[in-house]
Image 1 (tube, rainbow, N blue to C red):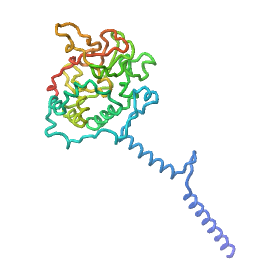
Image 2 (cartoon, rainbow, N blue to C red; image 1 turned 30 degrees about the horizontal axis):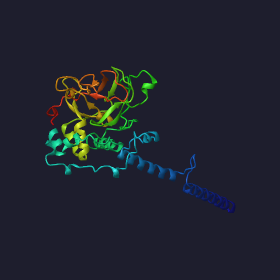
Image 3 (spheres, rainbow, N blue to C red; image 1 turned 45 degrees about the vertical axis):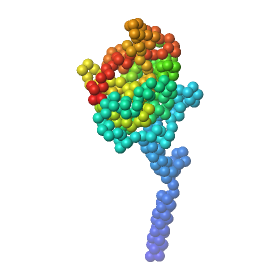
Image 4 (cartoon, rainbow, N blue to C red; image 1 turned 90 degrees about the horizontal axis):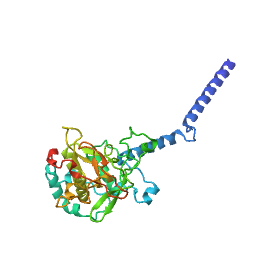
Length: 319
């Protein structure tokens, strides 16, 4: 009997020791390769999730390289606190949703803004603000992840698109063959960054332009902007349809492509002669966003199109 009691006691003690060891082991942080314990990893994951949520909310743009900042082509985007004040519909004018294009121009006194040829080039902050405003009030699914910053244009493919390129060089993202510059007496414009041959693709908004599905979307967009930006958009945006008999839309390039000046009929002289501002880059047709050189364009020569290639009767889209 004594032996049996002793054996049972030893078994009970052994079981208690095993249970105690498991409790201690469970309480000890579990390590994984790399030295982090589970608790630290969970805390890290929580912080990363919060950071990802913050990035998604801010929709940060590509950070500029040191070389970009050095040549002035790109600057670091500001914090949201440094952005211009964003307007809500409560601050819009009465009956804003009935304003025509000309009403909006008059509301913001845009004629004086348009006539000011001393306006500075839009900064990266300006383009970023316009892009974020578009995403906020027009299309929440619009992403701005182009590796080419808007101060240099957009990803340009000389052969007409990323899926039709014929060489490794053409498949690499590169800016279009122009750069922005202020020109005395003309305001802001685009100039050839290299020699361009006749028939060569100069601009392609196929992948970079955005549309405003309805007139109300465009109204809401411009009334959400500071007055000077709103006026610039009334100058930059145009009306276009993309197929025969299709619906007209307001279209925008929210990058330096918007700075392309016109050299159309309005620049002929009074006797019907040709002006020095004849267009040298025109769309292939009224439905296209691809602009081709109509003649050879020398490096540093201004690139000019014809604004009247597209209709200007804004009543066709309810404006």
